[in-house]
Image 1 (tube, rainbow, N blue to C red):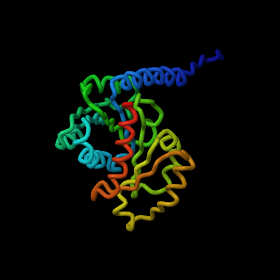
Image 2 (cartoon, one colour; image 1 turned 135 degrees about the vertical axis):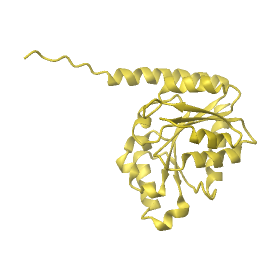
Image 3 (spheres, rainbow, N blue to C red; image 1 turned 90 degrees about the vertical axis):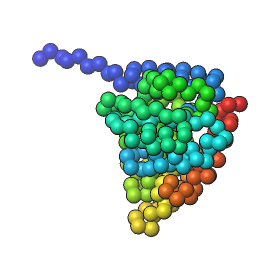
Image 4 (cartoon, rainbow, N blue to C red; image 1 turned 180 degrees about the horizontal axis):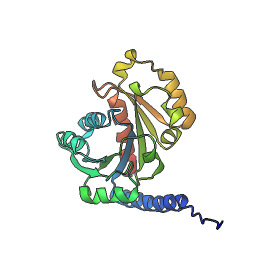
Length: 222
């Protein structure tokens, strides 16, 4: 039987994306624009968290948001109500954004005057972690109802993130969620990850994350 030729393309695809991402990051540095990539499962509270964050920071800096979803403009409408500049990105079934898609989004957003651009990536804990978007930093949001073991089950997501928000702490008494274990598991994957327990619903803890991001944006512009 004739041997079938096999071409391994995964590495070259990632290498090309990494090169595009690094180029985009350099361009953003020159413009003084800080791009934050936000990843999580669906329903973790990404959009509500961003709304709270914008409320805390919008008087200090110009903020723009890219909302990525397979379909709908629900999240973009929610963000638009805060007064922040926003664009909805439809991925056409793709479960993640890469550097090329992020560039297209930035061009459509026309956010050259922004200090901070937030990319709300497509909701899942697998694909988005594999692709460098060109962001300065990536963060993950993990909600209490998802369970404290997610860093064990989805290691790459927590390895690539500089910070992890643990959301919905207001409902922690109703779930079998161990904050100490969750912190331990996150640091198993990434010892340097900053951890911010918050409730996007009540606003508890959001100020600490806002302070971290404020410092990030300030240092990026130096």
